[in-house]
Amino acid sequence: MKLRRRGVRLAATVLGAITALSPIAVLAQSLAPPVAGSPPGGASAQPGEAAEATVPDRVGRLSKLQGSVSWHAPDAEHWDTATSNLPVTEGDAFWTQPDARAQLEISANAIVLNGATEVDIDELSGQGFVASVPQGGVLIRLVSLGQNESWTVLTPRGLVRFVSAGCYAIAAGDTEQPTEVSVIDGAAEIDGANVGLQVGKSQTATIEGAEQFTGRVDALWADDFVRDAAAFCQPAVPQGMAPPAAVLSMPGGSDLAAYGTWGEVPEYGPVWYPPVELSWVPYQQGTWGYVGAWGWTWIDAEPWGFVPFHYGRWARLGGRWAWLPGAFGAAWHPTYAPALVSFFEATGLIAWAPLGPHEPYFPWFHAGPAFIRAVNGPYVADVDEVVRRYEDRSYVRDVAIERLANRDAITAMQAAAMASSHPAAGAAQPIAADRFADFRPVFERLPVLPAVGAVGLTASLATRLHLPGGAAAMAAARLPAPGPQFRPGLGRAVSPIVLRPPAPAVPTARPGPAAAGFGPPSSSAFRAPALPPYAPPAERDRADVPGLRAVPTPPWPSAPSPPRAVYRVAPLYAPAPPPHSGLRRTEP
Image 1 (cartoon, rainbow, N blue to C red):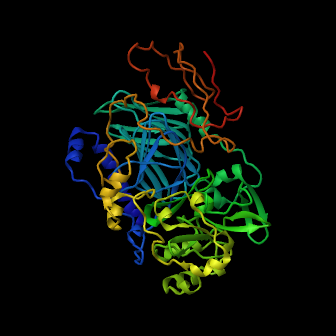
Image 2 (cartoon, helix red, strand yellow; image 1 turned 90 degrees about the vertical axis):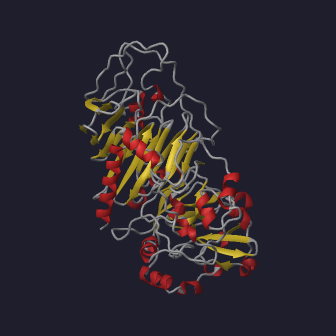
Image 3 (cartoon, helix red, strand yellow; image 1 turned 180 degrees about the vertical axis):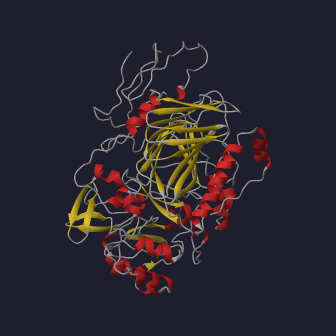
């Protein structure tokens, strides 16, 4: 039944993308009433209430960003400023300003957004990934495709379906520039109005036209955009002990070896040691955001701070903090949790403790037994007993600070500070053991009601939660981030997938946050080399790729910008490729 629903939804998405290319469809969409997005199920519960949350079965993350990057949830009214380690779910949308870049990770796969690029996540599940790219360009590193899993990207001139794992570059195009799909490695199929193309390794497909499209497949273009993709897709060099296969399938799991170290402990198996000071404790260097179907979600500040805070458990081993990924085998697959902690409250204070080895996770939102089973299976001895205790609520008698393995790592802060997503490190208050009796565990309800300043909180949720001022207070307290215009409540697709005029070269609307994650672990900022002034050669650059062609370049006109100039940017992938990467620039 699930596969049938997915097939119907994908067919409707494809049909809508193709029919939206006509002026009649555009007019119809402009006259149609907005489609109301479904608010997150778990976020509707106020303190003291419980509502079952339909949580996604697959979650990605915003792993890296540089410059001004915006995002919004399915039911948002405007764009918000994005931050690294945000979870990515179905219905989210992302936008990069012309001088910005961002990277999304879906399992072990990654998508880089070039400048002035919009990506809308239409579907993200265990069966597949569907995204719309109305404008800009994306690089895709598709490491693997699971059984019955498909990846699809919608562009203004057609649908791109990836046949196999590989390395791809997609330029959405506009009314003056063609849509281009370059396959550095792998294979893709393109379906559009009057266009059906098969694109193989070292080939570029070009689709042109405004209403009637024409397409062709040629040898791989050798421009900066494609070279960026090839460098981005170079496999990482293994460092030290290889992590478990289940960790590599988690968003950002392959990054852990570049920051900390893996070890083997007889009692727990593979463990990961983070690069932290002795005074460090988990869930303290970051903020609480009100995101997605889960409500309160931990957003860590470290570039490696996604996997260890949404999967696994924490333990002190030999005086050092270690992250325990769990025992998966063939029985379990990684299941995302917003934060693996137990919440406690006292007068004016909220506190949380990281879960330790073998401790079950009981969420503050009410979830179904399938989620409780999946999120606890790799970590507890008897998952059936955990599900039973959750369903009959007998677990509430067993949760107490004194019984927690990590009771000496509890972090507390003013409840009002958490409600507004204040950084936890600056507001943290240590709790002495003699104060444990003052704190009560929080069960099946929000530990704190969010305030209008909470990260990820939308106006519709503020209204549903009966926050003071509701949507009006949200609008007054938060300045919208830059991004394409969209109709509030439209849901998955921000705007119709239609051909657009070229984006004007305008400065960034407002300064964005510092670069995060683009570069090696020792560098906190992206330092791309400056490109020399462009001088058109007699022919385009060549690269040592089988079948690569040299394309004659006509003299540039004096007034318009050079073709594809929007993609002549500094490399998207900061670490230098290996010396023999297979793509080498040769001067004419």
